[in-house]
Picture 1 (cartoon, helix red, strand yellow):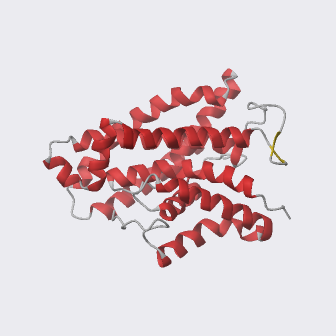
Picture 2 (cartoon, one colour):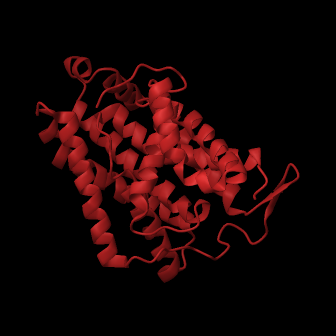
Picture 3 (cartoon, rainbow, N blue to C red):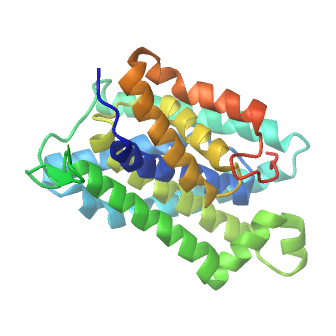
Length: 291
């Protein structure tokens, strides 16, 4: 049985905050639940893996390169899919089905391209020596991954609350109709948010190689549930609240793995159901948004 470590829970919590942040940003702005979120994480992980294996690149080097590719992919996907959906009467349900189908397509193509074997990066790319902090010892990849997560979560906060385009993004999150009536290009703002959501997914996927051990083509569905649970905990439609949701999830996961390890894999589903029943607006008590 593992000994419970609050500090390890915080490190994992920061990582899980990043896992849920992209999904929550897309939902808050576009109002669709991206059920392919975990599959985009998987693609980001495989991109970092192959760049390291074939080119010897440190995974951090792939972040800006993959980031540009995922932002472009998100903008293209938005304009291909979402404007055709929003005019439909059952927009919410049809979008769920569509992104579930997209998830299955990405997974099938990944199996064809990479096979079913899980992939890991075993080289100490973030340092050979473990890190000691407050009397505890961790693999170097854990604090580095937590730090990268904090940097990107802080960047999203600055984007939303310290930039002009962030102000328009928050206006769209509040009301797409009122934002459009005030002259904001809702589709452009939403497409950019969709692209940023996929960028965050790619970074979280790269970090998954170190925080979760390995990534396989079927990685997507399970981690999407985790991302959704984190988003619900912090408040669905509230990207900033996702940080709190991630911390709560990471600490709860460490406790489960320490005291009830056989139940640890059930944690995302338990938290998801419990939060929806007890506090559907999330821990921060935000008003529930509807897809």
